[in-house]
Image (cartoon, rainbow, N blue to C red; front, side, top):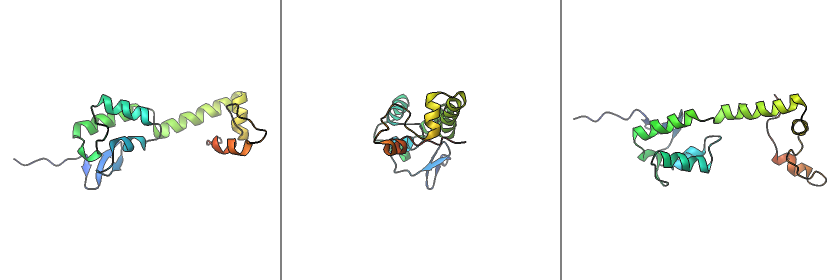
Length: 131
């Protein structure tokens, strides 16, 4: 009996949500490479799909890769999340809220002091504010 080739695993690695990950990479770090998926989301996803903490991407079964892709596609991540963040900032700016004005001026938004550490706070609060 001939074994059918794995369509999700390319010679270079495994495709998850359109990205190619090397087979030796940890599933945890592969998931965290997506914008908007942090350590807690990763642990919840892996627990939900019964994937071990130290599992490698190459050791995943086809069904697990498909389930992982389905879960990730149902979440708001990557460009959708960036767009949502920009829309929220644009909404604050348009209504003239205090936070919106602080974003527009590139100043700290969450009450940090500005007397001495404005440069540091502005550097840390960098978000694409214009657009």
